Length: 371
Image 1 (cartoon, rainbow, N blue to C red):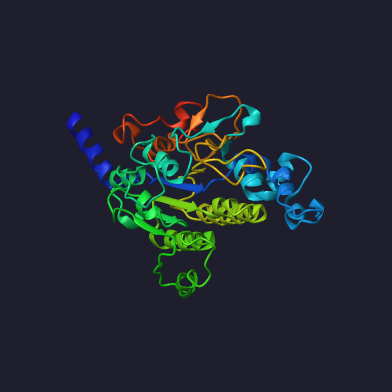
Image 2 (cartoon, rainbow, N blue to C red):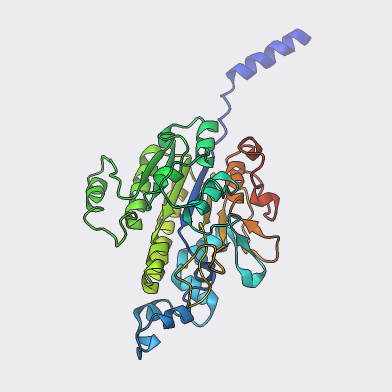
């Protein structure tokens, strides 16, 4: 009878449908170049805006004032980025870096400009001696994107980077060709006639900067790739928030935030409508460096500019409990982004680099029960 029972169990197991494979996780890293925490948490900065006015021009007559001004910082930030604050951070995620609440995020590199900042995010720690300029030198170290591509057994199309700044061809990968990288004015191939037209059009609608295209093209190409190749690792790097700031165009900086909010709404709505992304996709949104704190230096950054090391970091993940703006916690660092992405992907960050900074959730986050 004992053997008969074993046979019955074996037959029953053979007749049962196979167990569904565990759903694949996806991670999306998004950066806004040089995006000050002052605008992210406070919206329209009246002192910066007033300093940009021509002599005798009333602030109330400025288009940016009419579009983005409100009485409180909470109202101003929601007016600037209504989806980010009204939906994403309210219902789905959390954000650190509001220093008025005792929440601080900083870079650990000592340079406080773009390539070192992005390298810190992608490598899990600063490499100040090796990465100390914005020259398009190939990243000397494998990035977290390459690590996830290898660990996940992903094709180059399934681990992709879309960036407005052309230097990302060098920043994003240590081994050229490991990932799909489209950066700067690089052509983008697509069977979509509309996207193919936009690929041609990006060179016909240049920005004032030779190395940075409009963020709109970066986003449209990324969305096309996302729909066609279903990547599990995706990085979107937007640039206009930094370049308009360097040019002193505060109005256009604010408009860049506003457009980004629209892109984020479209991306989130699409992800939430797709069975292979809904409930299994994590987003980390941050910046590579801060800027000066006031009207005299808000345009600038670098190691000599006070406040340029101050950043912020937002999290939208089924692996973390949403809680809106963080307050009163140990300081977080940009270097923790890599380990956080790896943990969300279901891997051990120590196998990437044991000397890297630990994931955010191990320091101050609150893990969400896994689905």
